[in-house]
Image (cartoon, rainbow over all chains, first blue to last red; front, side):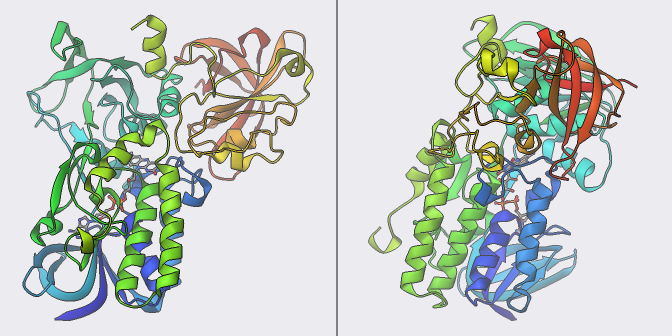
Amino acid sequence: MRETELLVVGGGPAGLSAAVEAASHGCEVMVVDSDLALGGQLIKQTHKFFGSESERAGTRGFKIAEILLDELGQLKGKVEVLTNTTAESYYRGDGVVGCMTDEDNYWFVKPKKIVNATGASEKILPFPNNDLPGVYGAGAIQTLMNVYGVVPGKKVLMVGAGNIGLVVSYQLLQAGVDVVGIVEFLPNISGYWVHAAKVRRLGVPVLLKHTITRAIGENKVEGAYIQAVDDNNQLMGEPQKIDCDIICMSVGLSPTVDLLWQAGCKMMYVPELCGYVARRDNQMRTSNADIWAAGDAHGIEEASAAMVEGRIAGLGAAHSLDHVDRVQFGERLGMFWQRLDNLRAGATGEKIRCGVGKCTCQAWEVD
Amino acid sequence: MTKDEKLFNSGVLTQSRPGAELPPTELWNKKKNGLVIIECPQQIPCNPCYSSCPTGAVLPFNKIIDVPRIDYTKCIGCSLCVATCPGLACFVVDLTYGSEEEALMKLPYEMLPRPEIGEQVNCLNRIGEVVAQGKVVDINEPRKDCTLVVHVVVPNDLVNEIRAVRVVK
Ligand SMILES: Cc1cc2nc3c(=O)[nH]c(=O)nc-3n(C[C@H](O)[C@H](O)[C@H](O)COP(=O)(O)OP(=O)(O)OC[C@H]3O[C@@H](n4cnc5c(N)ncnc54)[C@H](O)[C@@H]3O)c2cc1C
């Protein structure tokens, strides 16, 4: 049985930030990630991130991953990284975690503390023929295109005008793929206006209050039907046939919380955070005193916030292991919260503020 | 929803609003090197336009979700914000350039193929329609990060419409 002070599950921006923070205080850290490379969603992001300078705004996503990995590299002696390794199970009796490396190497680790930074999984939309080859989630399109350099098709219908739908549309255009249109159920784009403006000026139509009703094709996608919806969200008018060979769904994510369920953490359905999330205190600690969570796994948000949450969780874990004294803990916690509050200010952050408010308690001790 | 609202809700600017205003005409007409136009009308947590501005023309943000406000007297048309803005929402327009009918636009560009100096390109409006031909007179990459700033000569009556260029193969 292996042992470690802190096990960080997931090496995206949240997990990497947690690892860096904890290790920088002298904590011994093990990071496991299912993927072949660290970085999580960041390695697929070729666009420049919005956000504040302190959260690397203006830098392309994959570059932010490189920066985080550099920081981690400087703490080499303290951090062990295992890629191609999935944390699959949590044993409540003794707090042991079962991990699978490759497809056949199952092993156990007993960490003193855990940060769960497992990110999110994509939602999919039910419609006839959505199992045809050529129907993709946005994440798969990005992986093909931006990690492996494979163009997914020639003509894409994008479903969903949130930030992911808009950004992936832009990336498709950059790869020379035609985006024949973006359909959005809502009466407005739900991603940032500037991301929509970017694809609009390159000639991509955005059809608001429209949805996909069916994919067309025998063995692969050869087109799609879309249709308008009325104010009561009922289909109206005639379906319209769209010529496309790819249908890309970007209709939201939900937090990946399997380990937290297994660990018996108090969970809560919070629509604003896009699914079930663990209840937490202000240092991201769950109701299981040995487990913290951060990033999209704690509620769908952004990399900028994920990095700060990761920092907080790493700090909390290091503090609980006596690597940080109380004064420093309080100071850093305050600083990180100020950054989070900034990121969540204003109208765009309202949803998150509301969601986080629902599942945060002052401290578990008094809860 | 009116037609204008529908357009705006889909990412097309239809009129000036806070965060998406034009420079004052008098100053703009005579400012060599041009002035910036930022089209960022939504409060989002983002501030690189401010932090990249070397002259303080983009005013300090009280909160990171503020829309940008500009002191045009300080703008020198350097286009660093054009190169930095993650939303590609900054454009510089120099009305003093060339003949009476011409203007110079400095636009962000992240597509392939890259344009070449001297080349004619299609100028696109906010919904991607080709509204003019423009001549590329300079290209630079201020941040060395693959976002080009393309300097293109356009008809000066279209500077409020043109927002992108496309290389014609
Ligand atoms: C198209 C697109 C554009 C975006 N643009 C922006 C932007 O401009 N600005 C911004 O701030 N954010 C942006 N985001 C959001 C941002 O990428 C995410 O919010 C961020 O990556 C979340 O970080 P995370 O570390 O929580 O999760 P992730 O990045 O998803 O990382 C989770 C990691 O955990 C691993 N993992 C999961 N389960 C296990 C397990 N059981 N065992 C081991 N490993 C596991 C996964 O392999 C993955 O590497 C964008 C996202 C997308 C998809």
